[in-house]
Image (cartoon, rainbow, N blue to C red; front, side, top):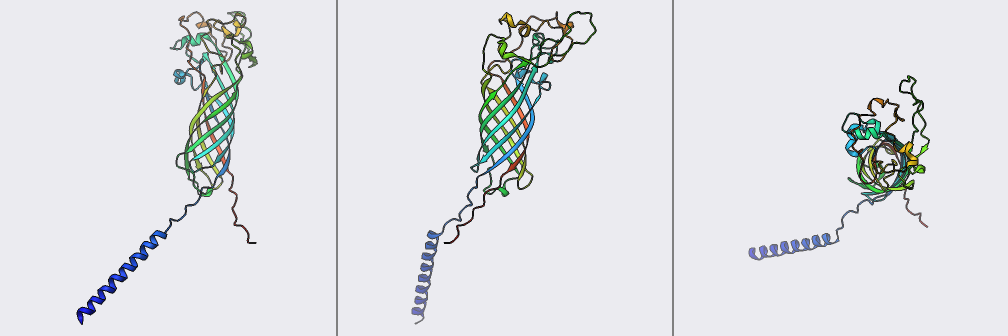
Length: 315
């Protein structure tokens, strides 16, 4: 009797365990992962201002440590950014950029003495329209108020650029070595492109490839402050109106093309007379390839609030 009772208990126990196991697997088959919150695209506007630095035939990259601080100018711009994926955004921007350089920034007795002797200078105010793709390294959060405190990113794009290099005419009152009257500086009103100083009728409209990196810091629910570094490679070698060492140039432009004999630097008004006869005879330094420039910007960024999705009303 006891054996029969024990056998019945075992049969009931295994039957119950088997039933529970079947229902457990059924539950696992029907179990679904909790749905993730979908990413909500949003937009932002920003305004930025900062520095701009030119690299080209009057200030090649190797001279950056020597004259980089003197060629530093400014830029300002506005941006519209659409954050449409967790890691991807697209941005359109308009930036006003000033570039300038001067051979007289070099040391007349230094390693770039031939460039100092050449005595060229320029300034150009550029208008740049850009469209860039942004990769958000840490990703955007699915909800705007939950965005990260720090958001680094990198970018690459394409720009259209209008530029117009200008120069100053020789300083007035260069008539007598013995004069003590200071020279008079001229305005930036000489359009270099129209003079065709190298016999080339280049266009004032060109393109550029912008790339760089940046970071945003969350101030509150709607505002960020950001820093952006951008490098541009232009499609033109005439942002500075210089593409060779000025050996073979049209004689009609000699007043602007060959400035090595000017007594005073037209842009800085530095007295060049002590160095006029000390040139080494070596050709001035020029940069190979297209002109380049880079910018930095501090930006104030405003994020537009997402449209609230409301459930449909019952009919």
